[in-house]
Picture 1: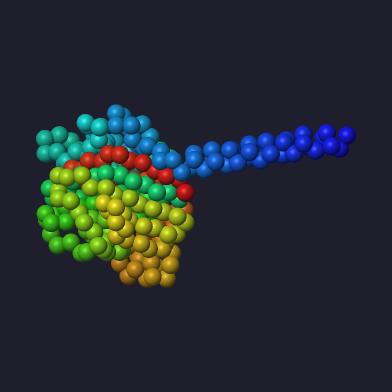
Picture 2: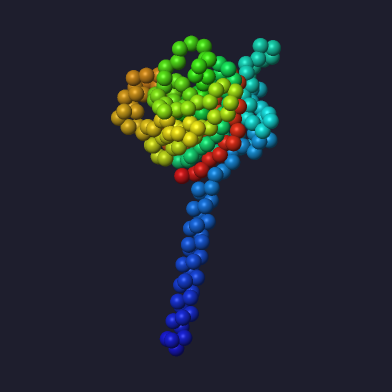
Amino acid sequence: MKNCLFPVNFFVIIALLSACQAQKKEELTSVEDPISLFDGQSLTGWRIFRNLPNNSWEVADGTLHCKPFSDTEENFRSDLITETQYRNFEFSFEFKLAAQSNSGVMFRVSEDYEQTYATGPEYQLIDDEGYPGTLAEENKTAGNYAMHIPENKTLRPVGEWNEGKIIVNENNVEHWLNGVRVVAYQLNSPNWIERRDAGKWKDFPAYGLIEKGHIVLQDHGNEVWFRNLKIILL
């Protein structure tokens, strides 16, 4: 009797192990596969920060387009945010700036505060060469705005598409530009706290401390386009 049951039990165990491995593989794939955040046709998955009135964002030619400030009609402007909130992720996107434009991508943003920048660290997007006025190095494209200077970056000219990426894993953050890592920092580290308290964010106590929040495309009153917005959950 034992001789008959052993092969049966053995094969049952093998089958169960195979099923578990398949389930784990499926779960891993579902997490690691990129999720598209923009279908190229609608604002599905996105909305205006705090549901404020807005007429600056539109879908145009397969892009998310932030229109420039209008001199001929009333402007209702605000940032565009994801419906979903995220904690750890790899967010990739393509962006194109008009001449003299300024924008940015923020993350872990809370709507409990009146401004997106009160909580969300920013991947800066700006016309480095043509923006009016003098720009500090940390306020140029791919920098952690008002905090960290991008290094070893190659930025394509205004009017051309660039590839950005933000990786957030607990307190560790990286900015990538056109395939190169240009910024790396650790939220709430002694160095980060020193930079925050010595600069623009000293009067924003929740800046960079929200553990889970929205991804934000900034409306700074200037023209910018986004496409191929994808996220990988970590």
